[in-house]
Length: 443
Ligand SMILES: [Zn+2]
Image (tube, rainbow, N blue to C red; front, side, top):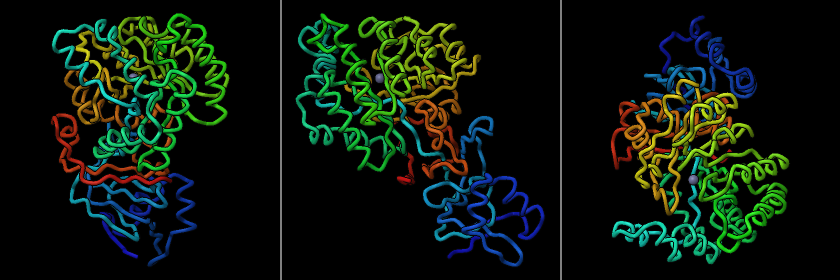
């Protein structure tokens, strides 16, 4: 056992006891530590941890702090994969002590909106567009989402996993410890279930937490384009009940847009999700204002995503329901959009803002959450704190996760340790990955 003293207060003093234990520990963890790990030395109770990361700058993102909860001389202590203490440096014992040499520790990053499981790519389509082809011409030639659906349906599970892992690894390499992955390129029963099973397999083997979202309502499958109701029926009467029963998804998503599904159709999908105990999310108001944000809020959605055309009423509805606004600057950039999400209204109504990659083969082939933050700052004028909260605490809320996204006692010990001096460096540099170490555990 290593015994480290980093406390500014003299051990044994009343101030030491007050600051080190009673003022910071949550009751459950205090009790646990007291019973299992505390030791009396010279009349003191010393907390013991499996591992301590000390001599660090912390951005805790703790809900109790304003902003990002910056602590200049901080430490994180962990036992059995959970944080037992995060705060100013103090005296503890531990089996392993890591000196972070002044580096910045944030919670492990969370990418709360991706479509990273698919086959093929759309580079030829990208090139054709650069050479003047229109979306209609590309779609007419079997391109666009149809091309990805067709390639994904043809691919076996092993091929899909092999294609997806490098995309996931790129996110992990930048400090991501929780990622959301949507289905939605199968668009029939067998292929959607295949995608969800593939995501489950990835979740079981990859060193990252995975939140799985069923996005059967992504696009009308080409073969049922003339019978919309039959497809909605498949989603609501067959697939959602089956997925809920097999526990294959944590949430249900949809794409509410002129080129996808109407608000009435999405409401039908959401009613089925609610009946089967699954929370909902929505691709809302990306290309036009169909009042998708308000619709999502009326179902208590975890998040409404994109939001370029959301109006003030939609923002107010999200504020009332606690729905998180997930901004996707990679899609905004790729589509060369000019309509900005209603940032000022989101702020004034107190809606929590998250930022994600929207990693997908068509509108956002973006494998970098760090770059997504830079894009959110540069394009949408989010502040540094908004960007950082958007890939940690608020991204966790967008997934309905209550034990990740902050450095708080009781939360999972998911850390990103960065070779930077200030949090702003994570946002402002482009094509720069300063990750020193990522800590993730399956517990
Ligand atoms: Zn998306």
